[in-house]
Image 1 (tube, rainbow, N blue to C red):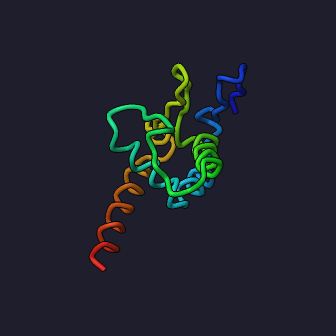
Image 2 (tube, rainbow, N blue to C red):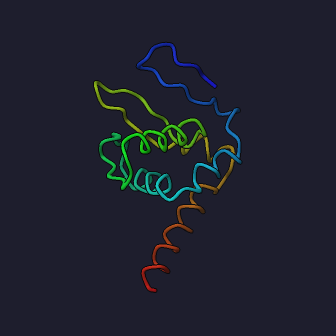
Length: 116
């Protein structure tokens, strides 16, 4: 894992350190999946404050940390905002089609549950 060199720099796993079981664990939580789905629909990065999750701030922070440490997203500080972006290229190189398949399955599940 790349270690942070300052308090404003966040540690992320290098591409070769990303493991399938960590990615699947990160994607298994509904709140984290919501974050990933919103990031997938975004044109670019989104700040942590963009997300309105129905959990406490500390729990939200935990979810972002799990996503970052698993290699699903990249977080960087831009001024005072912590910006988030999906690591699509890394995930596609390691697990071709996985992210798109999971996002498609989540969308189908949402429609199925809405239809009752």
